[in-house]
Image 1: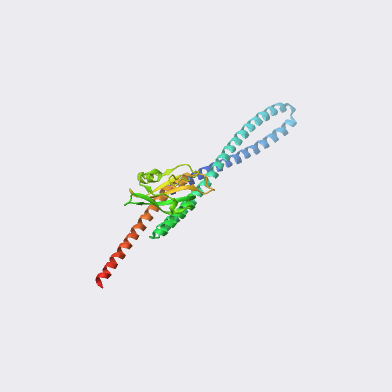
Image 2: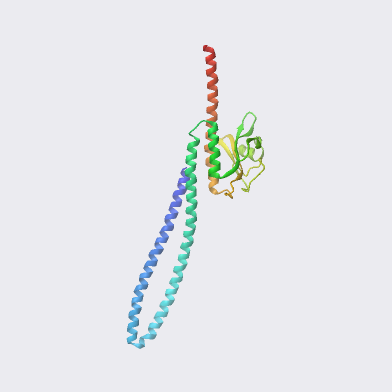
Length: 272
């Protein structure tokens, strides 16, 4: 999470720089306004003097024309700088909205990751994973696959948008899903959607260190979401780590509970 916090701090510094530019430009405008006021007083004084001495009118006219040209040039420069600052402010406003969305997503991810690690019940963990993929990534049809090491194939253990039976069993290393699990690389393709459950639009491998555990295969996004964003790719990485760890821990816990129950039953038989 430190990288995300560093990114937020960097964007905060970018905001302060833009704000400082606007403040400096405002101060310059105020300073120019004061100069113009002083010049106006001088012009009024010169006009009064020239009215008393008609010979100075021509000299005053030339001075005024030169001053007008100078002021028009300064005005054009000021307007150009104002347009530049307005463009920067527009970009900043867009970036601010992006930062807000990122902050909200990261906050939601923090809460979701806490929920993931708050239980060792596999069914509860899978339910939380489904909620995260729906709410944070915006997926409509997807499945969570887990690797069956004995059969060396992936089987869907939880899904959204279609029944579990609709999702195929995938041999490890085969197709998009099997290849992602084998290599550990995330796949992200066309976000328009796929009706072929062997070819997802995105596949997130679930790994604990170097051990392959399964994958999250996404086939269709919610209607209001048109594409994957850079933030989604960050969420893929974070989600893969947290979900994989939570599923791995809950499976180990379930196995230990069953073994403990078997051992306890055997002890009970011996002691009767």
